[in-house]
Image (cartoon, rainbow, N blue to C red; front, side, top):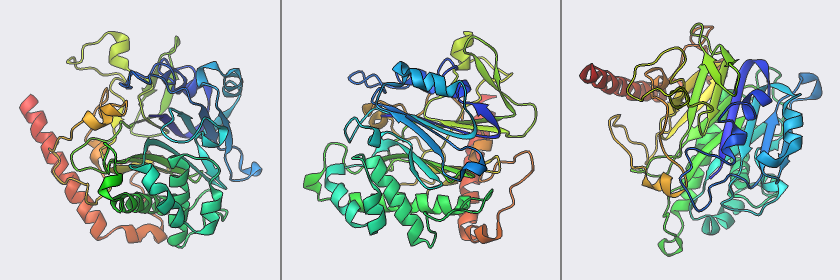
Length: 402
C-alpha cells in the first residue's frame, strides 16, 4: 500500500519541511514505513509524486512532479523541495497494487484545478474495471492515461461531479473553488458507485479479499480539501489516516518537528497515512505517561468518515451507508488492514474534538455558503446524534480511567 500527505496552511511552507526533513517524512516512509507490516514488500518504492498550487497569476491548475525513481534516490526531488513553497501540497509514495511502473501511474492525478490521490485498492478490480469504465461519460473514459484502479477512481469522481451538475473542467471561482460540499458529495457518490460495482461481481469472480475495498482518498480544488478513510466492511478497520493542526510547524533541529498550538487556531492542517512525528518514541517517553507540550498531536480519522478542510477549519462527517456502524463503542477488526501491509490505528489519539461535525477554527464556527446550506437538516441531525453518542462513550471511558 501507498502513503500520502496533505498540507493546507494559511501561509506557504517550504516543501522540504514536510517531505524531506522530518524524521518520519513522506520520503522516509518510502523506505522505512513504521506502520507497514507487509514484510514481503517492505518499501513504498514504486515511484512518487508531489503536487502543489502556485500563484494565482499562473492559473488554477496545480504543478505536478512525478517519477518512477524511488523517492529516497531522486536528487531532483531534493533540489525542488529545497526551493519551492506552497500553501496546499499533496505528496504520495507508491507501492503498486495495480498498474505498471510508469509515470502515468504515479499519484497525484490532476484535471484542471482538481488534484486527487489514493491509498488502498478497489476490491475485485479485474472484474470491476470493465463495468466501471462503461459507466463513465466519454470525456472521463478518455481521460485515463495509466492503468491503476486509483486513476479510474479519479475518473469516477469527475463523472460523479458532472452528474451532480458541476463541470469539473470549468475554472472555479478564484478563492472559492467548487465548494467543499460539492467535493464531499462527489467523493461520497464515488464511494457509493464503487460499492455498487463491486457488489455486482459474481461470487465466483471474487478473490480472498471478497468485496472489501480500501478507499482512503484525498481530493482538492486548490481551496478546500476532502479526504476519506473508508473500508467497505462493517467489521474490518480501514487503513490508517491521521490529522494534526496548530499554529506553526516548528523546526527544532535534527529532523525533529513539533506542531505548535499557541491558541485554538488552525493555521496549519496536516493529513497523513502515517504521522510525520512519533513524539513519545523519539523522546523515550512511556505510553502510559501523561504528556503535554505538543505530544500526541496526531488524531485518528474515524473509520468510514470524511475529513474536510475549509477555511482552515477541520470537519468530520460520517459516511453513512450499509457499512457504517452507529455504535461508537464498536471495535472493528484490524486483520484485513494488516494483511495489506497496514495497521488501522497506531500512535495517535482520538480526541473529542475529532468527533465533532465542525471543529472551531481561529475565525470561529464555519459559516457555510448559501448554496451549501442544503447539507444541513436531516443529515446534520443524524450526524449530531452520532457525535453525541460517541462523546458519551468517551466521557464514560475517561471517568472510568480517572
